[in-house]
Length: 121
Image 1: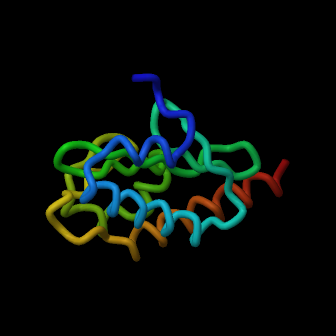
Image 2: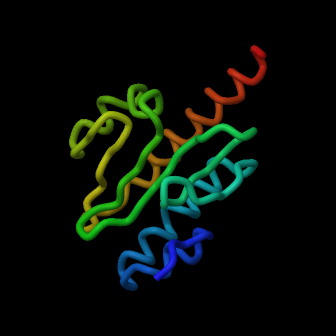
């Protein structure tokens, strides 16, 4: 099977339960960053603003991976502390409610961060 080239194609490769969750995450990101552009980067859904990466997300067997670069995670250390993490990544378990409010806050933080950087140039 060829690699997905759109987020719709990417999401369609998962089971129905995971598709529902991935679509919720997608809609949450779109609402929090309405001016962002959807792409596929590193084989997963990616959102860009002014050509700069904001966040990525990905589906896995037992969790949804969320990648807001180290800065997006660093600003929410306390809120993310209950989830398994790596540098710039967090795993939200599929068997638990997705923290959509937290995802919204992180995406809005990243939007503000990128807009601030753009103004300084």
